[in-house]
Amino acid sequence: MSQPLSPLALFRLSVLGPLASRGEIKHGEVKQVARELSKQAYNIPGSRRVHISEQTILRWYYAWKKLGIKGLEPKTRQDKGQSKLPKEICELLLEYKKDNPNRSINTLMSLLKKHGIVSNNKISRSAIHRFLKKNNLSKSLPDDIQRIERRAFEAKHAGDIWYGDVMHGPRISTEQGMRKTYLVSLMDDASRFIVHSQFCFGETAVDIEGVLKEAVLKRGLPHKLVIDNGAAYRSGSLQSICALLEIRLIYCRPYEPQGKGKLERFHRTFRDQFLSEIVIEKIGNVSDLNARVTAWLDEYYHKQPHSGLSGKAPVTRFHEDLLHLRQLGFKAARIDNIFYHRVKRRVRKDGTVSWNGARYETAYQFVDHEVTLVIDPHENRALKIESLFGDDYGPVTPLDKHGNLTRTRHRPIPIDESDKTAKKQGENLVEIALKDYEKHYG
Image (cartoon, rainbow, N blue to C red):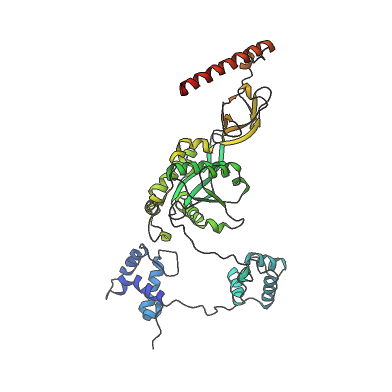
């Protein structure tokens, strides 16, 4: 019985089809055909690459001419599984690895150098890897019971789960000089659709909140939002916003970035296909940079077929679930108020409250009252005060010491006048009550 042919050999022969199927090829024509074949994209078995070099195609062609299909079989290393490392090094590697199975190859190489056994560039990583693999020590964890079980998963519908994460971006020129940027992105799990993404000058909860606000205005409300476990994201403001929008806020476990693997994959694509193409020196400001991000997402990324979506484009998959998306509804009218920050303050005797190094004036009747100061974190200013139960107490204004020189002051009413005023107010209340009674009951 003949031995079955290797799938890789059959693939190589299929690539050589335009050359192998021709009887006679003129001088110089082989290279021309190989050059044309190298420009095509291929689904290469066992590889993520899609292109094959002209030299490789020529090597396959001449091997096929000489040995036929057998010449296209993948070659097996003669020393496969064997190690040429000296016995002394092998013994030390076994000792180091068994002492701490989590030691990486880089750590092992450093230990060998410190021991004085090898010097720089005298031992290869692949040689150490082959030796460890042969001795079943290449895995970092010694026992499967210590390994976290991971499963491929995907939300059933768009809007079920959104992921939020931050990627370090380039430094750009601003009026304050060169400043570092951070790409803050939110991705829908089911469709890989980027519901919103923009560069910011920070990676705080406020930046996440700003991107979330734009996302819900454009794409509706998710059921769950998954973000990092960092202290910056555990702010009360972000938790409050998600509670008001009925979004379940979930924090990734510490040191487990695999929980947001799909968004990490997007970051790699973004670096390779966006950042590598722009000229940072030509970016005028962060708004210019974000305009380019939006254009790239809408015109390229969202329209590209995605292998994780069975070849569908993210925008196509997202639109399939439009009926499943939660809309803002009546919350849209008070969306700004939902995203405001709120801090408790006690009104001072001069009718002011302080925040972020600044003082704001309130109505004088709230002196000595504990109130809630409402803040717009993106404009970095205080807006108004509320009661601790959310009742609107009116706006606040920046303290104007010069204006207060001519402002009419509140004066207490004398005791006798106060009694008259109280009596008059009581009479008015009785008259109002009688009129209401007559109006309703005749």
